[in-house]
Image (tube, rainbow, N blue to C red):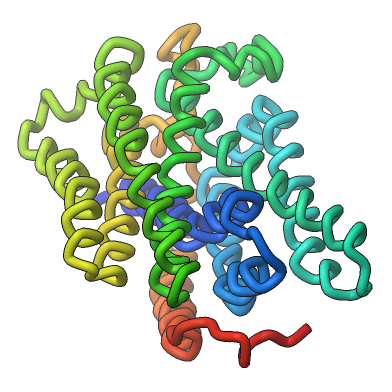
Length: 338
């Protein structure tokens, strides 16, 4: 197998893992104004993700680093074409991180309200814009032969792009609600469970619409039609989405969260598989598209990077498994640190 192909799927895997891990953080942040009815509720929500959210964002840095090192031309064109959207995501992630740290520094209701608001905004904006960005990549970005973007931020806010944004928001809301159900107890757990149940039908409808729209508005299905066995990926993803509802009814909450995780990974790989070998397809002319073959680093660079990844990624995974195991217990008042 070619090194470019290997790195293409490593690139996709890193984004999928980021969406899976940081997705429930975004979901908790978006649910914060609705489930956080009291100060105790808010502390439960914050403590459920507090020890984990910054570690989860390591995968974002890794995905960005891999794009830069393995596909430098894609990195350059992506960050110039999607500059406005990516800067909004960056600023939102910054204020979200600051919110976690600053909220409890001053004993003032107004102070906490400010940071509660920024926590919601800092979770909703990245969830929406990541979906918008990837949906636009799926259907093609208007870039010319010099890699110059022929449009602006509002060009990206097209119907299919917004549909992708809504899908990501709902995926992360469901993921976050299930996570809160796993990590809480009593009346708050019941409310989190109801939230997961209320979000799920909307997620199912939007997912179906997105799959259907992708048939008409993107070339994603070309690879699936050429290799029908790939449709198994879509079937597994749909089965995982349906499994969430079944597992929640059985009160198998952690298994439901794992099913939600698989749904997010599957949704990401639906696009990654459909894109191959394109990394940044042009909607103007396919000859302008950046692919795993024409935009990659040298074979020697890819080979050295692959050795590094094979050594260090298992270490990162082991660390995160240990961290999740360490903070797997239900959040109670004894865990409140402020």
